[in-house]
Length: 302
Image (tube, rainbow, N blue to C red; front, side, top):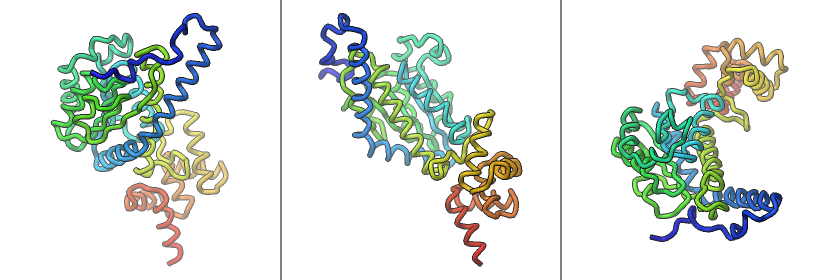
């Protein structure tokens, strides 16, 4: 079996432990930068994956993540941010991590070999033909991730695989394979470093593009955010003000009239008669703000 890149020895690793601290940190920083560059080669696959995710979410399906160890933490970081940032319901997201809730305290290695747990987790989450599952594994051969993806596929779900090596078991049952060919780790096999960095970037890109497809982003603003704290309520006001051209006080008033829904508040500012009318316009455009604004402008000209 060919050596995996994620297990190979880094060219700067010889004598690393006797280098000066600044030199070690420079090597570590450079390794992270090189790992991040690997994501560019995966852009076409990430784009294809984002379309699948958007389609499943638009049709009422769910997005599931399955992984073990540090890959599981990368999945967790992406998944937990989606409701607040893009307003995707928490009930539309499933996070399957080897070891279950206990993994958040110990991150023990044993559960990543448990294929039965993976299959059971997919079944318990009710993953099916309307859904999409993203499995992540640096090596591409983690039994938990491979089994979760295979079981999800057998239940009709769309499947996306992310790994840092080519030609790996995780890709065999995937509708889209995203390979992130990161260089060897400075600490051989410590994939929480470069490989994890590339995974985090790829997941951020994938979910953000999916959100753009769904109409949750307008001119770089998160117009579908869930404003559930002081910071996000202030951000919502600033977004309404920026897009509508209204002052802050007006934006706050419109946001209150909309029940806190940013898109609705913007349509009220554009001339929608009331919140119900704005909602109907949004429903007619697949909840995409730009065509909804165009619809209002068009109605003014008639």
